[in-house]
Length: 504
Image 1 (cartoon, one colour):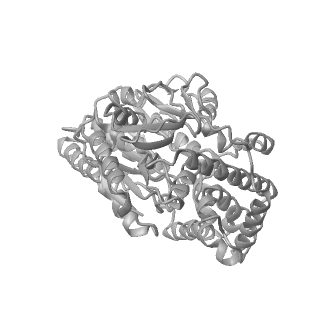
Image 2 (cartoon, rainbow, N blue to C red):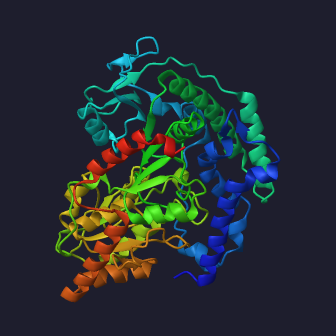
Image 3 (cartoon, helix red, strand yellow):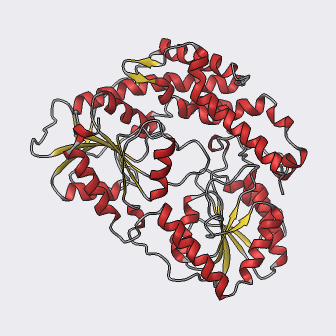
């Protein structure tokens, strides 16, 4: 177990990284505003992983207790993509979201026929999370919906904007921003390594080009509102901030729970449909921008209902991982090696339960190939498998679900699965699964093994306590689970489009 002092030290480092991200302009002496847009906000996402790198590179971790480092440090591994690969793909890092299918009905400024009787909603990227809502809006025939990025499946009556806008960065301003970021971070004794500097410099150039493109799209369409599934990272955030500049409402549908602290505290859209009351409380307490908020539930959960009981019968353990790749570890307390440490603990747990087997459902931003390599070299190759099966299929026959700070861990509760919360980072977990009584703690190797063993010995009273905790968690974090979330989202959008003058 980590000492309380170690937790506090890492908490300070996490706070230092976030403070530098938020306050660097104050120490750099530059004007981050250009043409009505705040580039400190627009560039913040690029600094999330780089602030962590700077803190670690500054040697801050050497001040921590030795047992803390040993507890999260398996054999060294190289998980980072090469710098050359990063640089090669970076020029399209933002614009890759704007690619369209070629066989779509495209419109231009000259051919665009706006229906005066319909509200025009611009959904630049019809992500999987927004597809059902876009379908509903178009079926009501009260909306004209235009997109830029085609969804995987065709959507009837969805138009696509063909702009032909050129890649036109403002390299001078990007360089000005880059120098300011470096100076501001240096005031916190944080210096980016050379490879990180090159990456950031390129990203800021791409940022200025994407802003120009987005502004041209918005001026071409002049929509009544913009709908996005995220508002704190590009390119979605750029649409939100350009809409605010133009005096247009932006609507965001919550897309997940928090994997780490701080990074989802700030709101930017003018109207946000959240799943449950917990996210609304957090925005009210911590966001400097206060949007209009409505609790609607999650449309993707509309087919699900609250569990009637906890069922511990199943044929395997199921581990749901969080993102472990370096670019998805933001806080200094988070490490790409956490997943390997948890796998090591689960292997030891299998020793205690010779009839058990483990399925690993890796997050898209995890490294399943590394797990496969380690498992193949172990004595557990016939008992551990990586699976690509749909989560809903996996939950139905899981005896135990081991989850990290992940939305998928909450989804397991709809199936009434016993849950262990695995968290090996030297910081407090983001998701309060254990505090709610919805999961048992697995915050160290021994605790993980003990909690799995305890689940196999639970009686009816224990299972009922689990059930009560999971119902409370789902109520606060998933919101109303009555199958009506899609209706509430569409109603919220209609209200925003009808009263946008009250939002701006």
